[in-house]
Structures are given as C-alpha cells and as structure tokens.
Amino acid sequence: MGGRHVVGRDVRVATDPEASEVGDALASSQANRRVGVVTIDQILSSLSNVAALIWVAHALAPGDFGRFSMIVMIYTVAQVVSRSLISTTAIVHPEEADNHARRIVASAVMTGLIVGAACVLAGLLLQAGNNTLAGPVLALAVPLPLMMLQDVGRYLGIARQQPGRAVVLDTLWIVLMMGAFVGLGMRDGVTLTWLVLAWAGSGGIAGLWVLAQYGPPARGGFEWLREHWAFSWRSLVSGVTSSGTVLLMGALMTLFSSVLAVAAFRAATLLSAPSTAIQLAVTTSAAADIARERGSEQAVWHHVRRAITIAFVVGALNLVLLVFLPDVLGEALLGESWFLVKPLMLPVALKVLLMAGQSGLRAALIGQRRITTAMVTDIVSMALICICMVAGAAIGDVKGALWAMVVATVFSTGCWWVAMVWKGRDVVPDQVEPATI
Image (cartoon, rainbow, N blue to C red; front, side):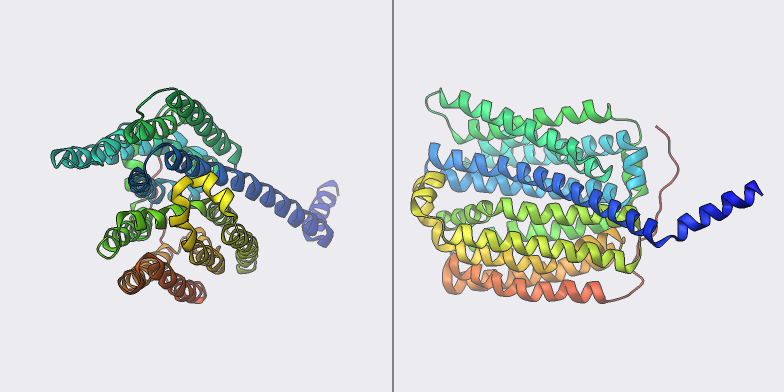
C-alpha cells in the first residue's frame, strides 16, 4: 500500500495544474533573470568598443578615427569566426558546454591562433605597401587570439546558464582598457597603433581569465570542431555572410564616398551598439533557452514574442536618444566628427528599430538546430542589403546607402518570418562522438 500511495502522490503532483503553473512561473522567472544578466554583459561588451571609439575621436585626427573604425570591423569578422564555429555550437549543444568546457576552450585557442596568424600576414602585406593601416593591424593581431578566447568564454558562460562569468570577463576588459588609456594620456605623441594596442591588449589580458574560469585547454580541440562540423560549417557560412558583407559593403562604398564618409557610417552604427547589444543579448539568451529546453512550439513562440517585444522597446528608445541627441552632447562624445555622423542618425536608428521584427526568429531557428534554413536566410538577406546599400551609395552617397539599408531591412525581416513559418527537413542531426577530458 505504501508503494501505491507514493505512486499516486507522484501522479497527482505531476498532473496538478497548480504545481505545473508554479513550475512554469519559476522557469519564466529564471529565464528573465538570465536575460537581464546577459543584457548587462552585452552592453558591457559593446561599451569597450564605443569607449575606444570616443577616445580615438578626441585624441586623434578624423582620418585616424576612420582607420580605427576599420580595425573594429576586422575584429568583428574575427569574432564572427569564433562565434559561428564555437560559441553558437556550444549554445545549441548545452550538454557539451556543461561537460566538455575545456575542449571548447582548446578549440577557441586553436582558432584564435589561426586567425591571429592571418591578421599578422595581412599587416605585413600592408606594411610592404607602406599602408598607414599596417601598424594598427599588427597591433590588433598580437593579442587577437586571446581576444577571441575572451569572447568564447563569454558565450560559454551563457551556454552553461552562468552569464555572471561573462559579465566578469567584460568588466575586466573595460577596467584594464580605462587604465591603459589613462596611461597613454600621460604620454606625448600617442599614435593610433598605441591606442589599438591598449584597447586590444586589454581584451587579450582579460581573455586569460577564461583559463581561470574553466581550466587550461584540454586535448581534443580540433576533434571537437570536427565532431560538430555538420552544424558549425553552416553556422560559419551564415555568420561570415553577415560580417563579410559589411566589410565588402564598406569597401565598395569607398568607390562612391570619401574615407571620412565611410568612417561616419561606421561611427553611427557604433553609437547604436548598446541598443543592438541588448537585441543580441535577448536573441542569444532565447537561443540558449530554446536549445536547452527543447520544448513545444508554443514554448518556442513564447521566447520569440518576448525577444521581439524587448527589442522593439529598445529600438524605440534608441531612435529617440540618437535622433534628438543635442549637439553639445554629440560633440562631447565624438568631437569634430559629430557633425559628420549627425545626418546619419535617423536611418541608422530606424534600421535598429526594424531589426526588432526579426529578433528571436534567428534564435528560434538556431535553438531548434534549423541551421540550414538560418544559413540560407542569412545569405539571401545580406545579399539583398548589400546590393541595396551599394546602389544607394551610388545614388546618394553614404546617406543614400543607409536609407537603402532601411528599405532592405524591411524585406529581410520578411525573409526571416517566411523562414520561421516554413517547415522543412532542415534540422542538422547530432554527430557528436563520445569523448572524455
């Protein structure tokens, strides 16, 4: 009888609507807390770039301001490589983040060394051609592997539902960077190369803390990438399409615009970075929760709706702040470069607002491991945006390019909704072989 009593009690608890509601409420509360912490982390991450941008705008000439924007773009592409191959894969496979963190760290170190070597080669080629970007590119290349490790460490914490670790890494970068900038401020004749080294070097030193959080790299970093290659190569194509298109677009825009105009475009997008960071935080958190929960379609749409709502509110606030920012504050932030950036604020802010319509959709596809659909949608969307922006630049310079980007974003959002609703056999199966550390 005792056994029957226990079974009956267990069945009652499992089917009790009140108990189910309490469990759902608790899970929702925990998810909301994680979104909050991840949002704080993403804001801190973007602030390191924005703070460096503001410092360069005040300390150096407008030409160096433009060159620093190019350095940030190069780092962004490097980030995309590690995020696509490693970070996104870890988020979608939370059991790997839980059980094989040191193998993931090893993968990050290996990938960082390869990308860093490629950056060194690019810097040497620029130096051979007496290009002014040679020094800054080499200054980025030296700490780049550790910077990529720092970024992977952040996402590893998110995948393990420990976003506080990511906050520690980004806070450490900002504190170190501020100290380095203060030290440079006491010197005369500071160049862009030194400022890049202070910014990138601080991120590299912060990356060492990942080893304290998760331990030294374990054997099997390459094997871990190989085991998940069916997913990660599609993720890489998707990510590189997005970031590579931005770089290509910037290069093509120089055919129709001045270097300063392209720099103004980059500065305008960087000023909106805190807002896009929040949108990214919501998307990342949603993808992690969807991948770990593997719940019903209704649960997935709950995460999508929450992401869209938060992203829309953030986009609306971003529009008000950027478009109506007084000249006094604009000059305080960017110095003489403010008046180059000001005319571009409205289209950039509108683009961020429109991106809210697709926030959560990409996360849902990736969290459900529908990476093939996400990859194809990224390619189509980015090709559309790139073509429209280059055409807009040819017609109306950078301002025309940005307004064309706004129009293209409307259509790309439609592409993501079609991809989300479409049902196909696009789920990439797990191909993970058992491994031990």
